[in-house]
Image 1 (cartoon, helix red, strand yellow):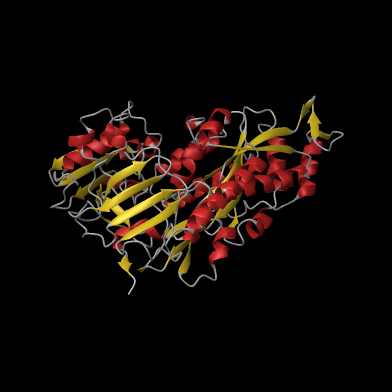
Image 2 (cartoon, helix red, strand yellow):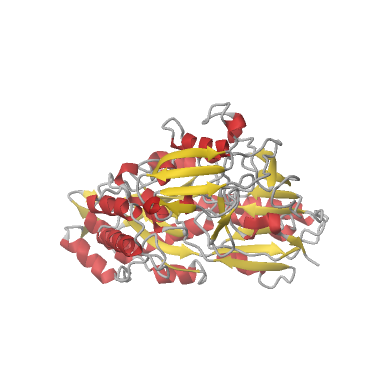
Length: 528
């Protein structure tokens, strides 16, 4: 489907929803809703609700708890663990005492057996968890007694405690079925503040408060997360009162600025938008083309025009205001230099202004996720910028199911980012062993030095050594940009003033169930 047809479909759907909304007996701020219920609009839904397959690995899963969790400032604090871990043996042994009196939502007790089962299952080669490389440091996990779990690491892995926000699954349920296809993947049971009561794929997930939650019964008794992939439709449903809150791109969030019954919250993020440059494509795999593309994009104009200032230019996976950012790797907008690089490499302009080399046009397809305005606008701006250098990007949209078969050859307007640790940002994105592994290393980037430094950085707890390794990685990526990073995007949420004490965290790329002001919906209090 083309961008034009997408816009037409959006307009028709938006008009239909607006007509329905006009008939709704609501003041547009959710006043007709039960006082103890909330409905929020999210852009994406998970493929599975099983933590054994990767769900909730960064925390805030609603249904589950990890050993640890994050507070509003992203500091680690105990959850199913009774205290932060005791670290011994030079950083290779982590001992967690477990909280007493915790039960799963089916009434069965939580014990050390469940922790051991969860981690061992994820690490099992038969388990289809694309993120298991994140747990590479684990050599063994063992039960010391019913209330103590010990992790033995192969090497000191500085951010290991961050990996233990991973949700814990019940052995007595998930261990009795196929880990990849069993009913637990869609009908999970956990220790968390909410119980899943309904999941209508592509439509909504409905949760009810867990009356036996160890952290106290939530004031929000019913929480519905409406899955609305299209930004325009999400804004329309928010305006009609069908939603209490929603994540919105900057231009749509701005339309609620004057609304006295709603508040807009901004979350600082590590969330980036980038363009993958597959090495298998003879155009995007050409180093001269890659370097030219990296210089031909006007990142500051994208931040101003697309994000309305709610973000910053991106030169890699690490934001420029992070202490892990490699100073000096910022790339200027330099169209003249981009043209010079292409000229020198033998890419000459054809009659239509698009360059050619050895009979091949400097042209490739660029996909973006349909219904995602930010990706669409980034893709169109990228294509417009690089055309001035004589390179053509043919922009197409589709679902991830439609895009995935093309990712080896075609560029994709992608995204990613995790604030917890630079290893989380970069290993899955860049290590050659993960080339073409689903949405990991989508450009199939392969650089021996980068691989070496990625491993070195995760196998030491020396901050200076880690910083040096990540600086090297970022400089190598700048020298051969297999991805063109465009912007880091702040997340904007508009929410009705029915609840008080709403906050946001520093957020990862994902802005679905785990992020937004509803990251801690279990702690919300009714507005007085």
